[in-house]
Image (cartoon, one colour):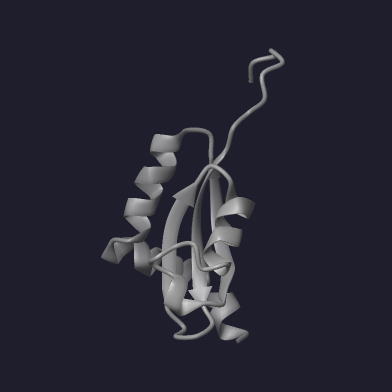
Length: 94
């Protein structure tokens, strides 16, 4: 890791659960807290009718393209299977 004083920027791939319809929303962002606030305040067209939303999973990447690639993977059939297995114990506890 470099020893310079520049701050490290993270990019997040995340999964939200709609408490209204029990469906998932997958996205990526450079500011996870702000993005969650936007989703839950109705500022995002895709999730506005599905509020309230709960963050159930996220991953941090050091590169924006890596986060975009991970989002694309999660939206694929194999990626959804991965998430289902990854969140198995959490879903079982519901």
